[in-house]
Image (cartoon, rainbow, N blue to C red; front, side, top):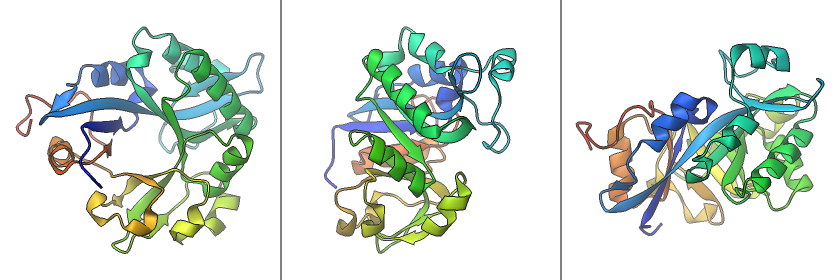
Length: 249
């Protein structure tokens, strides 16, 4: 993969609250002569059963809880409407990770897409999940979506290992070691597990798919991405850690 002027950094869970968003917006936009574009991952949940449909961001202990609107409001968790009302919302790109909720996940995504388009951000986000069947459902609903699959390992031969954490009754049978032909309808592969590898092992067999290498666990990893000409990375350390002014920056 040739060296690109731009390096897109996807900050893990940084889109779930104002603190994370502000921290990412404070990061430098230049590193080693490269332009940095910052994106935040948001853990998307929803309650479509109450008096008004609500999309919000929260992970919690396992990421599997399905809180109702009343709890979201009581805890002050960030909602999609609040995110998009922020004055600098258009300075970031977004990765929405499908977690779960009350009501149809497909309806939740339809509402998400409409809201992003209304804000002028219809081309600035990827929807990601660890469930291949769920992503295929979303592809059938909307061919234009940019869809990403979380994988725990990219093998030296270019195959990927997918372990689902949501939609388990359907997803387990579709998981395991996957070939490119198994990933039809997916645009992006996101390295999110402890055995994640970098772009150096990405094989021509995966051509047509974009790899977001990860997890990147420290500033030195971002340094490597910038120096090696990578196009993106999934960043797993706290966004309050500055890329400039650290021992590696």
